[in-house]
Amino acid sequence: PSGKNMAAEDYPHEIDEQLTGFDSSVTSVKTILEQLMSMPRNDLLQKLDPLDQAKLDLMSAYTLNSLFWMYLVTQGINPREHGIKQELERIRTYMNRVKEITEKKKAARLDKGAAARFVRSALYDPDDKDSKKKAASTSSETPPSKRSKQK
Image (cartoon, rainbow, N blue to C red):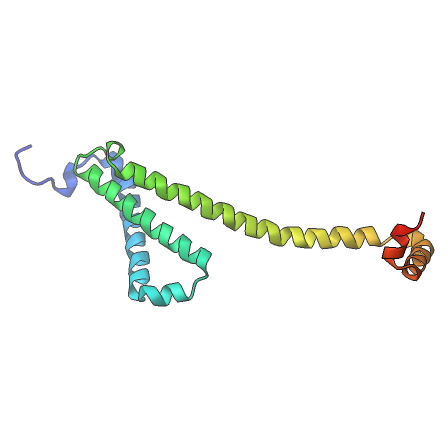
């Protein structure tokens, strides 16, 4: 090395694929950030429900902190020994909480449908139509409060 800046030919060609992938990723991040930044934040947040707002905020914080992590690496600073590590862990904790809430919301919607199917199948018995009609007519003749007091 003569002290000159490294020319493109001077780097090890074994990392061509990684550099191409990195360049592609940086371009993707830039495109997404440009789209997010082209719209005023308040306009964007008004279009989202509170859970999606939390997801957007967490994604933004995680992205910025990840970029700072990469910046530290380029400066020769070990990010694992920097406060950024704890910050990323804190954000990840909140991301997991939001994920749990999202999964619970989905599960609740699925359980309603499952419950309706269980009830429907429990009430339908093609071989026992007559006895259910009799049971329904006898139980409707006696009000529940009087039935429970009878012995």
